[in-house]
Image 1 (cartoon, helix red, strand yellow):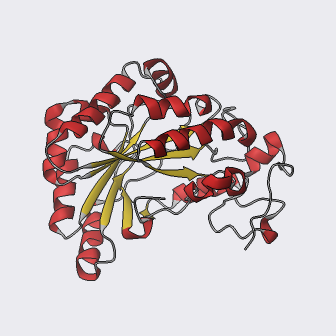
Image 2 (cartoon, rainbow, N blue to C red):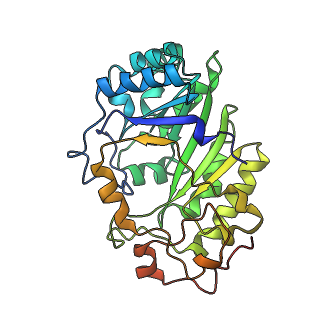
Image 3 (cartoon, rainbow, N blue to C red):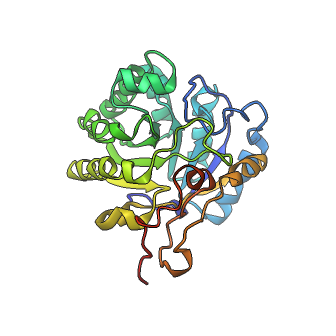
Length: 300
């Protein structure tokens, strides 16, 4: 089961720059157009939560949030305003600098959602298109693992045609990290009507590798979340499908692009009792069809 209750967190997008070039990036064509939330909006959010105690945790996110020079100050302000947890979503490379890592921890960042694209330097760096990125990300995670303060790490691996065979090896590559408490596997979807990058993998091809990764992660005592995969295909691992998300404050223009994927399509939608499954997307159906022989409605 999931370690975190998404309803207890709120996300705010404070950055739209990135120094990686991940092939699966969904917003690469809009980074120059989307506008981060302002400091005024940030302070309004803090004031609201100070008065209402609506959320326990604040997630500072963006294309790469560590590119903000005032990140530590944002975290400090959030903790002072009453947030019990501050999480950042990051590729983790800048955490390879011990002094920077220590600065964020001391400022109150106690949760780190870190993107891990591959299982080693060759595969990870091929996907991020930046040489040395895996080594720096892993070193950053090891720095967090060794720090004196209490912190928690969550990893996110995007599942594409280039990465699905790597999933069990990703779990193995991070098995030595004691503070890695949850691993997430986000099955890729393009924010458009077709798979122009040819990154969509068939669910039937993904499934055995995904199941093996879930088994290995759970054997290490880690929680697992899977995103955007048919729940009925996961069988006894159906409880890993968690498509819930924290409330997100982001440039509204993002949603115009996001909704082009056409989620919630399935031949069995009306008969299925699942409350987490997002069904199929328009690009997936265009490429692989409806998967009628693989899907089945979950009973109520």
